[in-house]
Each structure stands twice: as C-alpha cells, then as structure tokens.
Length: 92
Image (cartoon, one colour):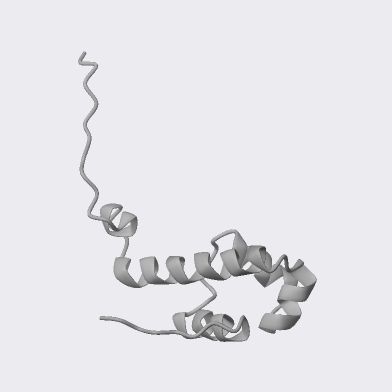
C-alpha cells in the first residue's frame, strides 16, 4: 500500500472539476450569490430587512446565504444586485 496522495491540478472551476453539467453557468451563479451575501453582511442587513429589500421570503434568503441556488436563476440574482444598488457589467 502506497502513502502517495494523487493530486490533480484544478481547472479553476470546481464545478467543471467535479463533472457538473453547465459548470460555467453554475460557477457564475455561485460568484454572483457570493457577492450578494457579502453585500448583505457589509450592510449588516437582517434576514427581515434583506427579505424586504430583495422581495423574497426570509426562507429564500437563508437558502441563498447557504448556497442553495437551484431555485434562483442568473437573471434573478442580477436583479438582487440591482436592489442592493450595484451596477452590473458583463464581460466576455
């Protein structure tokens, strides 16, 4: 038995490395959601205040913060950034 550990270099997209379908889209959603969470924390918003501001339930805010993004599409996440007074610039 060998004590060697196999290490594989990352592609830079953990979702692609794990073989997840639509890895680029999934990574983009995760990055947007992460920024939304950062803004909620920076602004010290409560779940209640964030819920009112983003127009979704506190339960959905909790799922967003927890990274459970299946119910959110990219367009909705972009809208949340707008509600948090952030401009969006899409680069290719």
